[in-house]
Amino acid sequence: MLPIEDEIIIDRYIVRDERAISYTADKYGKQLVAIANRICDDLDIAEECENDTYLRAWNSIPPHEPRGYFFTFLAKITRNLALDRYKESNRLKRSATIVELTGELSEIIAGNDDTTANAEGEELKNYINSFLRSLHKEKRNVFIRRYWYMDSVAEIADRYGISEGKVKTILFRVRNGLKQYLKKEGYYI
Image (cartoon, rainbow, N blue to C red; front, top):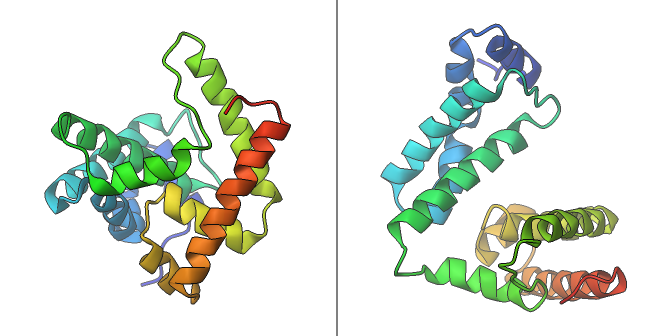
């Protein structure tokens, strides 16, 4: 059976048809579990995040209608749930992967704990999105797979049929390009 189109699934959510959840699980369940599992490194927690994603989607649609970006909508929910679960279960210990990814970007993006953090976070998000739109598709995809989906360098290389060295080079150059772009835009680094 062919997967049901996203538009039809979203319509099922809007009319409160519970089959929307099973359609979503059939089409995207494995991918959502993989996203959560990369963050939590615990399949049981990843599956809980997947199920919680369906509940959040059910509660968000309507009024929200993620037409044209349904998987991204679900992936963001899953990622945020997994990060929350990770933080909750690892308050005192940090995973080497998360520390590594944070370290890779820490030279570019300074942390900020004051009351303007939310406004600056929104501004930073807009700058990063603008920068990413300016990149060649391959570079943008490699960067997003690494820092949004938290894929390993090896997974990215395998996905795009390029060497791990090329992935590392792309990531290095994109991080440097982002750093220069943020400086040019006047963002404090």
